[in-house]
Structures are given as structure tokens and as C-alpha cells.
Amino acid sequence: DIGSVKMPVVRDIAPLWENFVGGHPMSGREYSGVEAAVSNLFVGNPYVLTPIETTPPPALEKVEEIVRSLKSLLYITTPENHDKAVAWISHLPAMVSGSLINACMQETDPVVLRLAQQLASSGFRDTSRVGGGNPELRVMMARYNQESIMRTLVGYRDRLDQIIEVIEQEDWSSLEKIFETTHVARKKFVS
Image 1 (tube, rainbow, N blue to C red):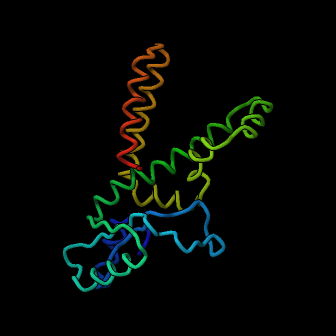
Image 2 (cartoon, one colour):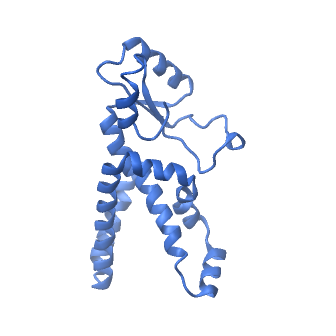
Image 3 (cartoon, rainbow, N blue to C red):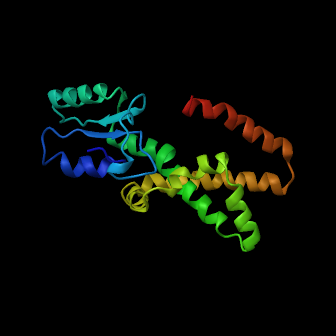
């Protein structure tokens, strides 16, 4: 298993397959299919394994060996913690990115919309990349990790509301503090 949601998969499959080990390579792309394959996709990227109490040690060791052969960074956690964590750093960005694209498409002036489309460059490309990915995968993320995704979406909405409020109040020093905090915090997520 290499899907992006672990709890329902592990819950349903582990009782049927003694040697089952849930896993999730954190190295997808916005493209899919054989034509999008790259040989070094997993190199240097996290690969999470989610064994449970009944996972036989030899089965886990074999999967660990496979992950190490891919030159991935191996992490082991519970299915529950995996799903909560990826809701923040994978599923929420997919939802936000898709919403960004949808929001841009709400521009009613066709001249401004076309100009925005022509001017979109690295910032928009980076921010919108995962929103342009496989729609079926996004629906599956929301469906099978609904509780965690809802928690992260509400948290994100709260931060957006905070930014809207300080801009409306023209509280530029508070806005700067928000972005000073995010400037430092980002380095803890991506180096």
C-alpha cells in the first residue's frame, strides 16, 4: 500500500493479510501515468511506514529494506498520526491550491483574467502546482481523511480570517509579525 491515507486502509486490510505494512512515499508529482514516471522520484524524500501492534517484525523489516533501497528517508509512525500529519502538509495544500485556482477564475473582467493568466509565473506555479493534480485523488483524500482535513481547513480558514482582519484594520505591524513568524516556521517544514 502506498496511498496517502492510512487509517481506513490499515483497519480494513491488516485483518485479512498478516504481513500487511502500510506505507506512504511523500514524493508524488502533479502528473500521473507511466509517461510521468521518473527514476529518482523517491530519492531523498520521506517514506512513511505505519505498522500496527500485530505487524510481524520480519514483514516490517522487509519493507524497511525496500524503502532504504529507494534511498528514501524512512519514518515510522501510527496510521492515526500519519493521517493527521499529512492532512496539514499534503492534503490541505492540495485543497488550498485548488481553491486558489478556483478563486482566480472568479475574476469577472475578462481582460484582467487573461492578463493574470499571462503574468502567472513562479510564485503562482509553485503555489498552484498540487491544485492542478488528479481530481480523483483529491476527492479520495477528503473522503478517507475527512476528520483531519476538516480540522486543517478550519485552522487555515482561521489564519486567513486573521490576515483579512489585520489588512482591513490597516494594522501593518501585526501583518508583518504574522509573516515574520511564517518566515521562521517554514524552515521547520522545508529546508
